[in-house]
Length: 320
Image 1 (cartoon, rainbow, N blue to C red):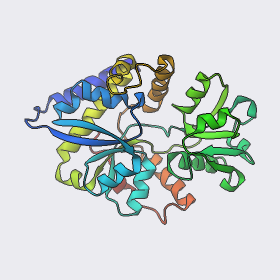
Image 2: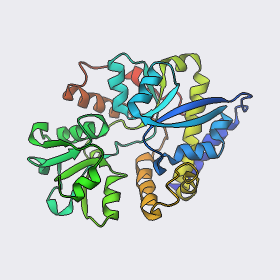
Image 3: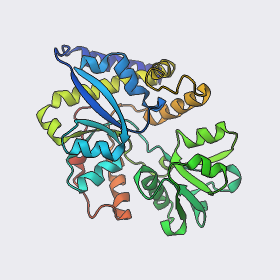
Image 4: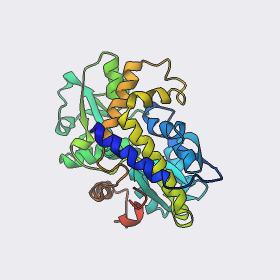
């Protein structure tokens, strides 16, 4: 695997090297959808090693809400953002012209987390249990619904409790039988506090399109070279992170103020867990079946009124 990542990094490097470095640099504000975090290491690596600069891009990280970034891209005010795939389909259903241009996560990172002594080992064990999640929105909710559907469990058979982003504290205090969070975060935080937990990853039950990069239809039509340069720079950073996560971790310290003082063992475990979701034979490639599954889940949830043109919702044309 390391050899494959190394060769991929070389290939991406040669791809970019074939293009002359642009004379002018364009500053791009990039909405990230979350706070500064080691999980954004591929972006930090791509900036620090000059991959975006080679594409004529200077990145300004914007850690605002995911939906804010999506709206700004859809309105043509920003060219790119980092979002979860379900948001792309929900936006396009409202005629917001955004397109998913590169897959970052190859598997949906959401999971149900329960105390190991709870007896919750399958989705069927959630029937009649209290399950805490940030709210009936976003990737956590969609992921939970997808897993329940795949297991033949109805939402009304589970007691859903909107608790905000307090999953770790709620489960630790015994307020919930289980919580929904990211496989790369809540389980690791709970174990670091000494709790034994069982984890039910959504990806074990259904293949869904996940987090990635979006661009506006306008920038794709008017400046495809900018999109290609942006995607390729990010993928070079991703390949480098997969090949040498320790170096990526050190680079992340330059962009995450709290990382130097954080529990290094825990944060490195967060990064290591993230790598598993990023691995792919072809970095950046979107799987059509994953998008079909995502649409089916949203239709079942009633969040889409009818099927969308998925070919217009995502593209692999910028993936080298």
